[in-house]
Image (cartoon, rainbow, N blue to C red):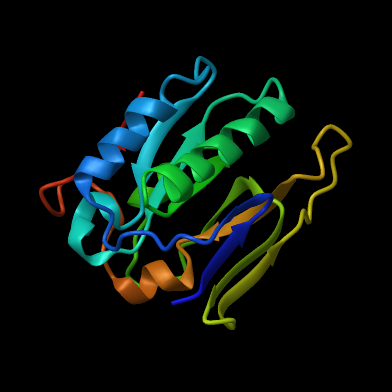
Length: 184
């Protein structure tokens, strides 16, 4: 099988393991946590905390003040690269202003809130046997001269359609045996 994945400047030709094994997640965290994370709290969010056997990725959310956007970009690149190229898991990393969205009602009501999100900018693409399976492009809708071209800053409306359709509180306590896991 011919495999290719790229997000931002990070690429791999090695498929990841689905679902992400807990052992690989722990090894990824052990290595990633050696970086300078003093300014950030790091969370596992998304579906992994509530149903780790039925997800294809590990969603990692950084929160905290951004004193250096280049440092944030480097952390997102390192975390993603360690996941897909060393620990065989897809690590979907971003920075959010906070993680309150994990506990918003998902009852398809009109309740929504805006949150600031920063991800790696550029193309995200997944190909199998040269066929494009998934493609997206991330660019900033908010302009700030301090943000490097490698980052995309946008306002995201929560809960998203995906969250409402799933119907679960992603990471809310105490839906299942897991909760939002603060790694640091």
